[in-house]
Image (cartoon, rainbow, N blue to C red):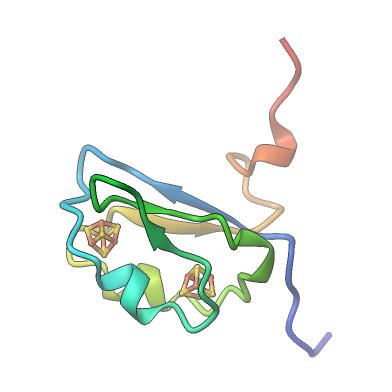
Length: 81
Ligand code: SF4
Ligand code: SF4
């Protein structure tokens, strides 16, 4: 299948590794990622993520990961309770 999918991806950010450098925010072409008050990345625009992985590829600390819906850690697989 071709075409860009939106609204199906999740972003996982590991604050144990993230140093709040802002690179992922700067690289995201979709405005998905913004910085919180402590300059850590958060993803209020996740519905616009196109899985380009520019955030993931440019993170110097491997702290951010794009999760496709089939990934077992994607929130859609979280079981209640
Ligand atoms: S590029 Fe990586 S280390 Fe920098 S703010 Fe984003 S997740 Fe954190
Ligand atoms: S995969 Fe691309 S569109 Fe999605 S958050 Fe990362 S840089 Fe932005």
